[in-house]
Length: 297
Image (tube, rainbow, N blue to C red; front, side):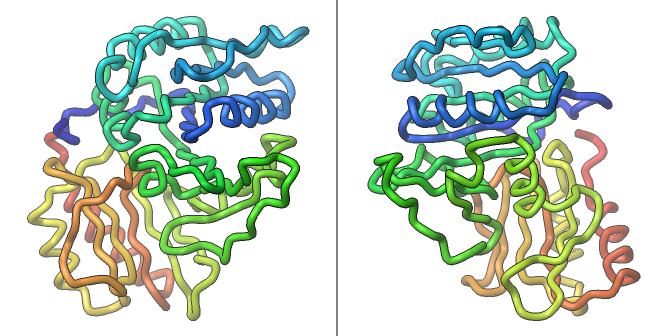
């Protein structure tokens, strides 16, 4: 799918969280705990695509939570039409403060996000978080780890102690399942650490020196030639990592990897990680790269 054939979210679009996992029952249990701990008064909808997921019972005394089961097959290919239809119906019954989508364990996360952004419903959706529940001993769904800034580590046995991750690597933040099992506020805090504000640079933990992110919404498409030329012309500040969406592909460049740009499964947003840049330098860099956005999208 051509990434450029997408619709940009409108003001007031409904936030959408993807929760990806190899075990649909564990993913559903975690999603229901998040929904139960959401802020008071918020209306949420939980969309369950995996046919292997258990059939949840309606949540008693919670009219503000809707459970929608999709009988569609893989939402990134054969079930795409059914997913778009279900999303349209749910959105018409809004407003919602958040949608939680649990895709099939076989769904390609990058293709799913591309399909959502190319659908007519994309104007009313803001894919603001992609989370992978990583179970020890089980492979994550295809492309999930590449796409997810936030990885929730959990063992196959809920009673066993979850493994402790070494810390954020690249663009990922690892957290333990137990720390996100209660209230949505804990999830939101971890999402903030993983993503940072969408329009401002933030310090990046776990790195020496001052590391700052610059971010652009994932719905924006950059002109590949202008983007590559602009980044190659930058001598200061030092660029550590670049992840950008173009009409051809999503690309990744890293100072610690082989030289050159490579296709990536990252799908959340376009972003740049720079080292030891002052506020004026960051503002100038953002302004320069703003000129590389393809406004003809």
